[in-house]
Amino acid sequence: MKKINLLSIGLLLMFGILLAGCSSNKEEGNLGKKDNPSNVEKTVDKEAKYYFTANESGSITKVNATDNTVAATIEGEGTVHNIQVSPDGKIVGATLVPMMEGSHDGGHDMEMNGNALFFDTTTNELLKTVEVGNHPAHIVFTEDGKYALVTNNEDNTVSIIDMKTYSVIKTISTGKGPHGFRISHDSKYAYIANMAEDAVSVVNIETMKEEKKIKVGATPVTTGITADGKTLVVTLNAENALAIVNLETNEVNKVEVGKGPAQVYIDSSNKLAYVANQGTEESPSNSMSIVDITTKTVTATIETGKGSHGVVTSSDNKYAYVTNMFENTVSVIDLSAKKVVKTLDVGKVPNGISIMK
Image (cartoon, rainbow, N blue to C red; front, side, top):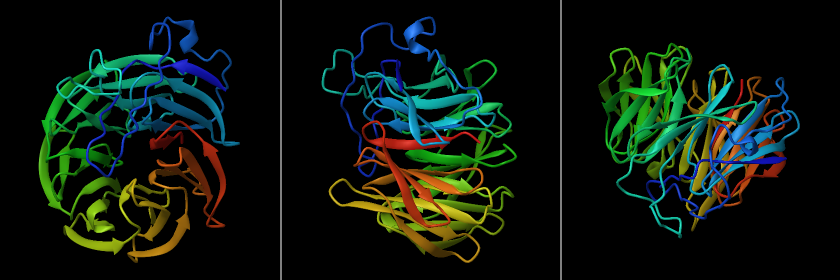
């Protein structure tokens, strides 16, 4: 396993349910410079597939999906919150916020804008740093690869980044406390969970405007959208529930899941939603709920590690991968056997997770 220095910046984690680890990993040298040879993994496998975790302690863990071994760690000062691999698998984006100048205790600057970082998934090379808004939360690519969107939690906005120029071309107002979101398969709409209110903002990416809000329930954290664009799912942290929304009628049904649900992921069959139940640091949950979107029922509950937060599935739906924030691990779950088959150590306080198709 190789270690590569990351740009020396960090993210302030918003709201009490998403607890940050504020420790720093200080490294010598020019952090995040493309021309620094120490930042690029020399031996690469262009055919390998990976998944990546965003670790609140200040690193990105790159894991080989074939054998679930850590292939590389990108480290630096500060905190990494969310991460996503581009649809073509060539780029991984992460959201971060600058540390307070002169801070030695992991403090964050409440006024400075944050950044989106883009890395080459093969070489781990830093491709570009893009300034976005205040306290960026999640980053998501459009399926056509044209844009990357970043929610700015403190500004109540979402930034649209043109991936050809790596520049913000539009900043759009949302609801209060925009956080996790997904984008429709046709790349037309972003469905953004507003944690500080009970609604999801529907942003039209073509017109670059918020089109409407959908009321879903208390403290929505993250969304998912089926490939046909007809069904939206939303984790409701304060209600211990998953909201299932019929987008043609706006009818909302709620399914009880575990305590303090954080992220949700719809698999490639578009029939099942996987919910990571985090709980709190004082009373952590340790489960993943599998919800049948059609019948609106929980079909299985699988024990994971403490503080389950991020979740993804493999393209063939054979495995699910869950970050456990309070154990610094990832649970690899065999979905046929409905059990954890491997637990691997990653960086401290792992949060977001994303996998190459």
